Image (cartoon, rainbow, N blue to C red; front, side, top):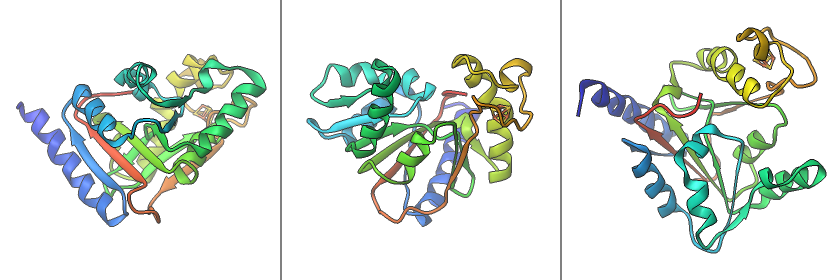
Length: 210
Ligand code: SF4
């Protein structure tokens, strides 16, 4: 293990200790393969699974594995218009919800910014279990730093990816917009989980997502 990899593991373990105080179950995996195995070990066959829009979840390749397994998938990306909206609502009743977190603070809080609000709604209430995967690049010192990071580093490429007409998709940094396509409608800080066992966070010792 390199010094850098060792520092990732130490950092992750520091955050995982803080998760415990907040009723969040924390895990560390060194790479994507280990992460997918751990995620699958949490998910019971025959149950329903959904996810939010997440580059991290896509990069893990777990969606293809689930497609070929014995699970009921609620995948809004296979639909458009009102049907897509209905799938997003259906996700609220799923057994498992897969997502990343836009940032995780050193003292164990999850920070998420959302346009529609469906993802932050599902993190806070709805799906019976929430499995959160974050690359080591998403660990930050504080909530203030998290918001800065999300709006200046994560949201611009996301807005470009989704073809949104926002200032950050044109100039690459946040200008605190209030336009129709604004990706930053809702800000969720998960500081405590009242349902022990509901939220699991896997920190991965690799860069994942934005
Ligand atoms: S507030 Fe607007 S400009 Fe700033 S990151 Fe969000 S969508 Fe982009």
